[in-house]
Image 1 (cartoon, protein in one colour):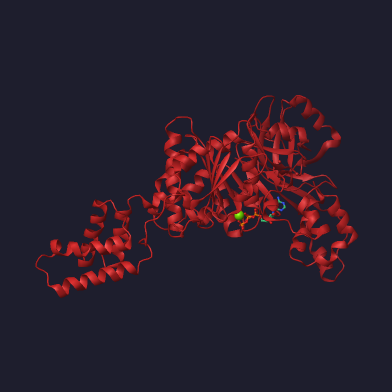
Image 2 (tube, helix red, strand yellow; image 1 turned 45 degrees about the vertical axis):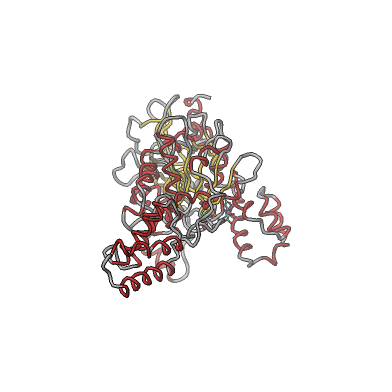
Length: 551
Ligand SMILES: Nc1ncnc2c1ncn2[C@@H]1O[C@H](COP(=O)(O)OP(=O)(O)OP(=O)(O)O)[C@@H](O)[C@H]1O
Ligand SMILES: [Mg+2]
């Protein structure tokens, strides 16, 4: 059906939900509605009114509220415990923000300001779909929209070109949402390819699934980068331990490490210590024996107390290179680099070393992708504050990450990040990535940040989101059923074991039996908690997604 026909059908008298009403001036971008008696709209709903040429101008509800003119005597009645019951004087109002005017082939700005008292209609699912369904063949499904009951599709071109940030408070569903989106994008035509940096071991649930081919490798297999320049690195580490580079001990150490290098020997503790006596004569030909013995002794003690200098030469037998990881993408949809635990015991198991490995991989991806030889992949990092922390010195973050955030999309290697707290992730990176944002419910403090970056309208819509529900702001998208919220609440209590004994309650049993979500049935009816893999792979239809049509 054409847009004009849909608008005509949707603006039949019985579809009028209210009228534009304002006590003072209002602009095109923002209008206020008063709804007719009995009508209510929820945050995120779409409404439209007709422009002069009969095409629909669509607005989204950002804040619904009750208004009741109050009189002193009414308040007095409350004080004496006898409030007026008459509800005819109260109104249901909605603040709405402009989405755009829908014509047959485009969405654009409306030409005319909205007339006072203009009739306002609820958008039919068809109009919402035309409004926000991506005009692209390369899409992935994000979830379902409660208003329209339709799938929310997002244009992958946009996410690849501009990057993505997923944010929200602890446990709100970020990782689940990200993994569902990633697995859908892997199943798109053509499939998107991913390198996934997994800091907590949760991405392993993607491996071994029938519909996608994902390979898991432990980060330590890529740790060879840590051994590049190992001789210089050893000197840097030891300089801190022996009181700086001006000391006699350091001079001796430096000469011994250089000798290892000349001998093409890995600088283990033993290799350095055994070469030290041979260096004493050339460094201090006239030195007193007691003094040089003391220096030798100090060197030996310092080296033996340092965990970062290797006891024995690490075996590189089970290691791989960043190039090989990139090559694996020829036969896989994604490679998960698991940073959650060490496997070989090759290198120190700390964040600094892990970041070094992740950065080396990122550099390889960047140089391959930007060389224009047809290689490209999306780089994903959960828990972005570990790798890309805010504060600290800029040197803490290698330049390649800024390049990926700012120019990655253009070069075929965009960055998708998950940030629990936006304030903890480097701002240059988040500002770039937040052109496309999936935001779950956030802490107040982070909502302030979202408000300052994305505006009050978007931030305002985040407050009431339940677990697994998100607002999406994107240039490339679309939006969910209702026994939902009740069931979800019950699940929450069940997971808290508060009403565990009540799981035979008939009402609960029937509510749960009618849901499609497998793990909920299992929890309540069979008393079995789903495993992490199943939790993380709740089918996408169970992610409630509201789109914020604000750009
Ligand atoms: N759409 C959903 N519907 C129902 N439950 C969900 C949904 N999304 C996530 N959950 C549940 O919420 C819990 C937390 O999800 P998840 O680990 O994805 O959150 P997170 O935001 O990544 O948490 P963290 O801040 O700890 O990283 C999980 O038990 C998951 O099964
Ligand atoms: Mg998580």
